[in-house]
Length: 80
Image (cartoon, rainbow, N blue to C red; front, top):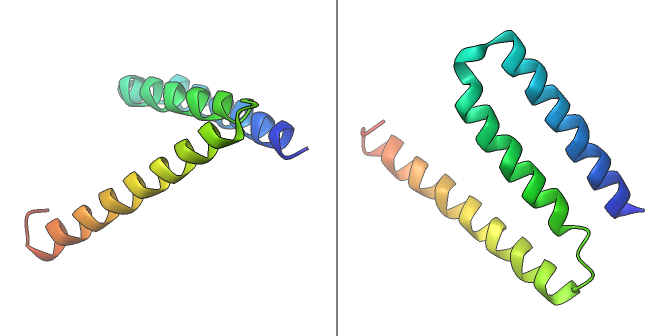
């Protein structure tokens, strides 16, 4: 059930992004990148290999934390 909800949420999110592209054409490149990332992330949840799915989840979480920490350091240092 969780996989189906994640798949549906991915589809809804992609529809919202497409609406944003139609309203603001200037964000098309960024929006297409986000669509690709969302599709890849959603497709991974339909994988039957639990170990691979767990590894990808942990890797994505670690990268997100590192990017947030880098942003904080750059903001604190006055670079942003």
